[in-house]
View (cartoon, rainbow, N blue to C red):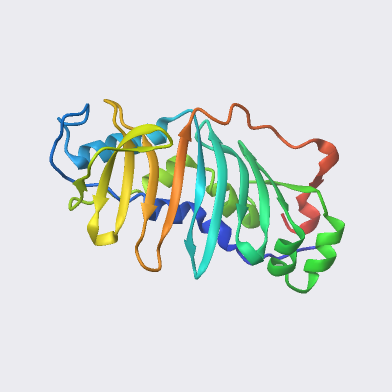
Amino acid sequence: MSLSLRSPRTVAAGVAIAACLAAAGCGSGSSDPLSGMSAKQIATKAVDSLKSAPAFTIVGSGPDDGHTININLGFKGGKDCVGTLSEGSEGSLDLVVIGDTVWLKPDATFWKTQAGSAGAQVAKVLAGKYIQAPTSNSNAASLAGVCNASSMTSQMNIPTDVTKGTLTTVDGKKVLPLIDKSKDSTLYVTDTSTPQIAQVVSKQSGNSGQFTITYGVPTTVSAPPSSQTVNGAQYGF
């Protein structure tokens, strides 16, 4: 049985995050560990910190083609990740990427909305199963790409027309807002000498979203049990 999936909107999650993360620029100093750096310098350091972080999670939601993408992904080692991507009425999928292998477990709604006329049948056959495939597979590559931290951060452009805001807190952490008024978005970074991105908020019409980043988790990214895995080759993966 061969399956040809149209590219799910959930794979655009990485792009949506990158677009929101483009909130950084130049601003005035204040009496905090970051007072000696411009907003652009702070943003650059924060993006570099995310790129080199051994482990972190991203949780939140953002727009894509008129739909809302919900993301809950844990990253480890730059290219490995585990978590869930969902898109409301179009379903969700569990995702695991380790090295050159990807495992994905879509729910029944996802199959029915993404796999065309074969969706209902596939949902029944693969209920509760992960499809295993190489990341080089055309159906799996874009999903695997969502887990590439280096690729994601490389898309974060640092504009020059953003200012520092007033110190505040995110999840109990002291943070400095970097405000891009032209895009109605704010990048919150930890108020430390080595700033880290804590949260991204965009209120721009048609592009609103919010993502929270936590460092140091997940502790492990493990392959699903073989009893819950099927070879994707027979389904076009």
